[in-house]
Image (tube, rainbow, N blue to C red; front, side, top):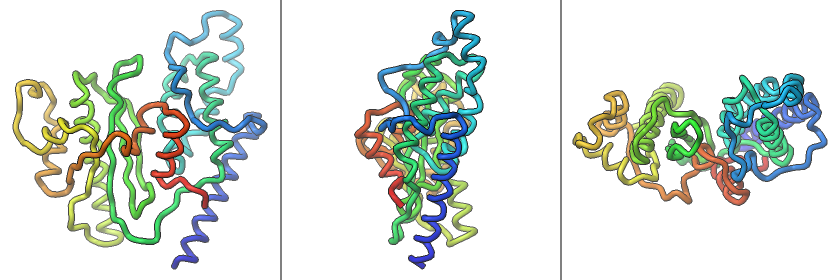
Length: 282
């Protein structure tokens, strides 16, 4: 079984490396220097960076911005969780991208040059299903918080997401609470899938959250004056906890692996969380 698993991992790793090399060659990025981060935390992106002169507009019109971002989507969704936030961010400016946005796309490709030999790996011992949920606190120009989640099965990432929340939250607690709700929906689906295909999951799935107030709100079952404006659909996390499907557990921010799915991070944290998401040398 171990030999078969290792052979499958090597095959998948080779196919992903081949895909990365093909898109690097397609957009003439093959000679790019490796970069240790998918997005520069010191260079925020905004709509104000769109072309302001006819020269810039003409240059960007001849740039394969949408195609390059689309090629990254395959990796962000299926094999490279650590670029999910960066790809979703640059995709927001596809309608009218500027030079700064194009540089951000090229930064992602530089990061792929340095990580193309990595692959999602799984540990030999069983660790079950566990999840991580996080939100960034509305630090971007649109003022919507970014929800993120990641689920690990036997130590390897099997599901992840990074998405702008559909509402403007009024506090960090509320943003984390909404993010936990979205993570709970994914957890329920994964539990049903695993129970049908492999074995029935009896114990609750542990969902890590780094906000004590959000955990208390989900577990208390009490409506407060400061939370009565929260729509009923976001209280699905309470139902999941009461039913015994989800067990919310506090996780310090330094150990929250989905932090890399909500904001650009420095190199050391990027490497640390990529390894925690099981992106390692095959």
